[in-house]
Length: 177
Image (cartoon, rainbow, N blue to C red; front, side, top):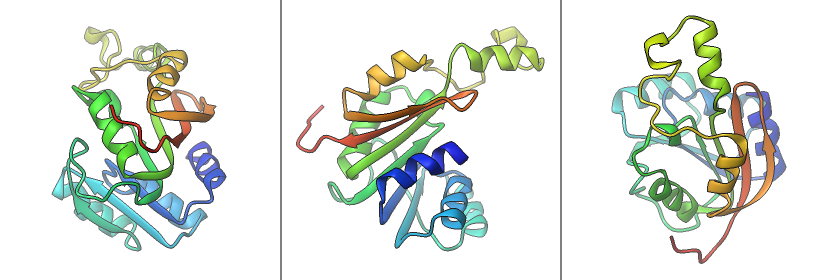
């Protein structure tokens, strides 16, 4: 979480959107360590949004799909998407939508492969799946994820807090994927 907040601080953003915010843990951390004017969270699960509202009540939450966010173009200074892209059938379409609503920066995070699977095996998890967490259908190394992300943003910084890869990028306005 510290690496994520450190990357977010580099942007000096005032408006922040957390796509796939889940229970609101990232939003709570941002709100505690780095208060901003507007922090919003969007998730497909109404149940998780209720939990998020209790965990980080200063943010505004709404239901939405990462492939079709109900938001205007280039609205948020910073769009964050953590631990979501590895679950998606079409991460390219999701990233195109994430960058569509971003005005300045995007901060993206996925599990670092093969280290994620190795860590799972070492702790005895998902052994029949060679350590692959259920629902993970995309697997990226640092180089692979950075290359994927660089199709949509200009990479500013890459961090690897074990076992994740985090990429901060500047949104390319006018880019159509």
